[in-house]
Amino acid sequence: MPSTDAPAATASTTKNAIRLAVSMFYFGQGLGFASWASRIPTIKADLGLSEAQLGTILLMLPIGQLLTMPLSATLVNKYGSGRILPLAAMLYALVLVLIAFSSNAWMLGAALFLFGIFGNLSNISVNTQGVLAEDIYGRSIMSSFHGAWSLAGSQSTSYQRYASTHYRRIARYKYYHQQKELGDGRSKSNYDSEKT
Image: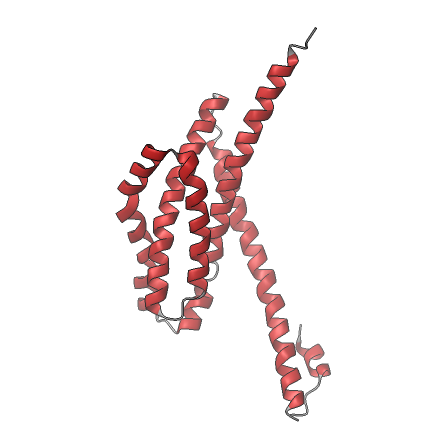
């Protein structure tokens, strides 16, 4: 005689898998946005931007979001958030590479405009999926999805801090090594004494 618990267990497993999948998309979006936001001071310094220039360039992100909001809603309604979300999330992540390789203000502005476009498309898609997941659960679980987004932000900040410290040490080591080869008289002991 088959167990009556099997269908219930399968349904529960499916619900949990859906919730985990949606949470991972929220986490990925939070990680992507925090990766950009935490690098703003560095990008500003690298490109030699003034406060006014940076402020103007940063406007490109919300402009991209606002201009494409109707289009994003239309695409999600026509093709479904389940199809749009993976593509939008991938493009959202790829634009981070464009931001990283921006060598001037114009490139950065264009990259942020695209970041806004795909960010908006991702937001509408993932929130639609969140609402559908709530329908499956029959109760509000949206706060857990937003928690995943926030968790990603804090994790990204911690990673950025670690990576920044690590790469500064590598840069200092390379500098002292080059100076030693040039006969500057510095040695690795100088690096060891200053690396902290």
